[in-house]
Length: 92
Image (cartoon, rainbow, N blue to C red; front, side):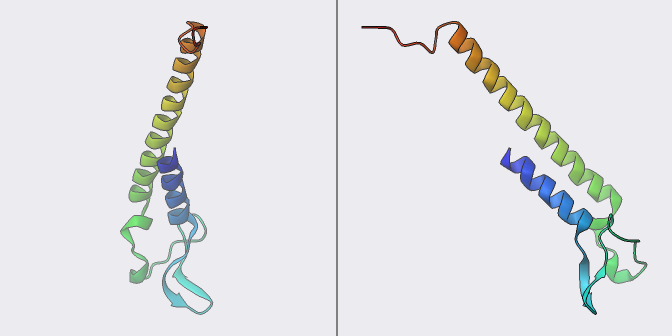
């Protein structure tokens, strides 16, 4: 679950954060979701292009689905164990 959260945070950072060399009050290049794309060669970061962003999104979705499936599976096993009496201690 923590890995999924970290990947979602990385994806949000890549989409929203400004990057590149400092220019005036902030960075020269705007995040892909925040502003219009810059035509400057300094803004050609491969991780900020849409194919790479979609790859990071796919990793985030896969990690989230895996974490959710693991949590659901653990809860089902726990409930089945309590229903069958496996979680109950015998009385002395």
